[in-house]
Image 1 (spheres, one colour):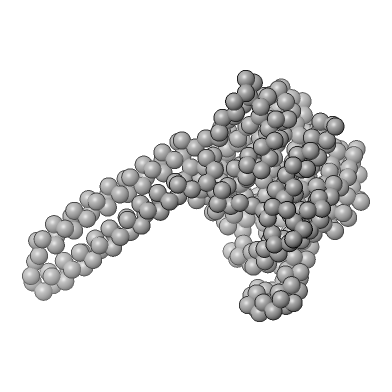
Image 2 (cartoon, rainbow, N blue to C red):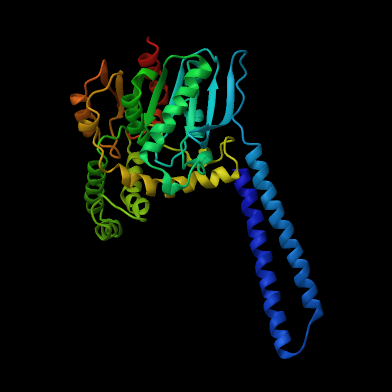
Length: 391
């Protein structure tokens, strides 16, 4: 977070100098109009301009330095691996982190939520124990975090993620000499994981979905209805008015993010404050301050959540895993929080019932909501090991 604080200070000083410069410019124009040139004001204005130019240069240098020095903390193990690298996947430049105490362990790829979300720092903080049993790979998908500029946001589609996910999988298989890798997806990543194992089953040992998304339109309608019910019950007239003004989802156009946020944030607050849920959820300030992100990445951390989500999410409304992906050729397990109201668990239960797969099952986390990997991290790690490695 110190990078952000320094940047904000420099930016505030720059704005102040710019305001002063504009003030002197206005005074000079007024003086000339009155026919009384004031050379001392002109001199002060020139000095302010030079100072402004220096501040802008310092800002630019600071941003560049923060980007160049971004890194993932070292792992002190003889056969360990700790890398933050940029790859080109289908012509798009993207970033991954690779972390493990033994580079010969199975490779595990974690798919972040979103679309547009980055959890490179969050997974390292919350699931550090996995690094002792796997080579853990986190991928900043196109339009998120360090990969925000992988492609123009307007060009990103669900197929973009599938193609690049397959290319990344091949890179990991080749680099680590693995015929298959393990796959975990959370929230949006849980749907992307299903897309990948359906398209490319021979590349994966199996898949674990948590905060499992199933039917995007039905999920949004259920979330909207629940938020409306809770707001009316709690006498939250402002939220009720906002929800009524927005109307029932699905939403299209430029306002998807903000309209969805009106009820999703409300439900997130409910889950975080539920007495049965352990650990409230994302530590956004900690994650935003993670060393993997330079200053520009930190800004794009937030831009992806807004801009990429807005563009991509409305492209997912026609998907229903219960009908579109009812047969898979790899083992599939759903790690569900008992109190998840963001991704209604009833839909995941219905999906598990109709799903045909070599092995399948639901693992319930009784003290979790949408993020069992955060709410009950220790048990989450144990269950991942049991699914992919065995007891």
